[in-house]
Amino acid sequence: MELRVLQYFLAVCQEESISKAAQTLYLSQPTLSRQLKDLEKELGKQLFIRGNRKIALTEEGMLLRTRAEEILTLVGKTKNDIISSDEHLTGEVVIGSAETRGVKELVTVMKSLQSHYPALRFSIISGDETQVLEQLENGLIDTGIISGTVNNHKYQVLPLHYTDHLGLLMRKDDPLSQTDAIHISDLKNLPLIISRQMANERLLEQYLHLSKSDCRVVAKTNLLFNASLMVEEGLGYCLCYEGIIHTDDASALTFKSIEPAITFPLKMVWKSAIQMSKPTQKFIDALTNYEKRLQ
Image (cartoon, rainbow, N blue to C red; front, side):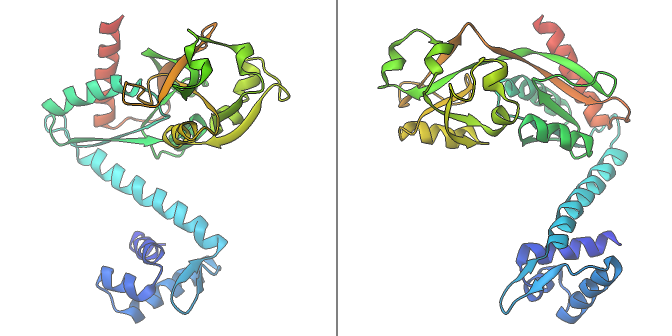
């Protein structure tokens, strides 16, 4: 299986048409069709369902699309890591992180590094903690920002200065907004909007000590912005971290902390058993020094 053929395959997936993909690849349609048939023959599986106007992927085709994207990403990243030099640092540092205001610490370091190495690039890939660790395990990201625990034999850990505070996002005209803080007992039977990670990690039971009968979860989402729209429309109250959604004078929303405080210190993690690329190692060193200055 050649990388070139995987690129052809992904082009067809994107265009949903062999003829359109052939145009973007500057290939003849018969040539591209033959390459795809050879790929299906090599794998022993049908990858496409060919329709009159568009083609769709089979289950095996969808799996190959995911793997092909991962393979080509790793190839490009490996190439950049190898050609990068210490003096003229180039390449990309890929960081996985959930939505958190703590990313500002990383951005401060990114800005400082880019002033010295203009060709250095950064990517932040959003995802919940499970997704971040999965991408880290598969080599799709260099480091991850999480708040949970990890195997210290498997991962290197750098504690960050920032700590997420859990609270409730609500409308300013809601009666609860007049209170100084939200108590855990106030959450019982409220219509709650929570992240999918909170649902998966059973945060309501583990940290808030609320049983399923105490909670009324009306919606789950993986993007806090979408959750804020639900709150604006009066669907419910969003259980989230402070500082991610703006609640200034122009906003219809406000954030109230939960008491007693429920906090989640952030940390950056990366795999112990691999050789870091020069850009990633430079970023880790710079962030480590930055965190020491904050202590």
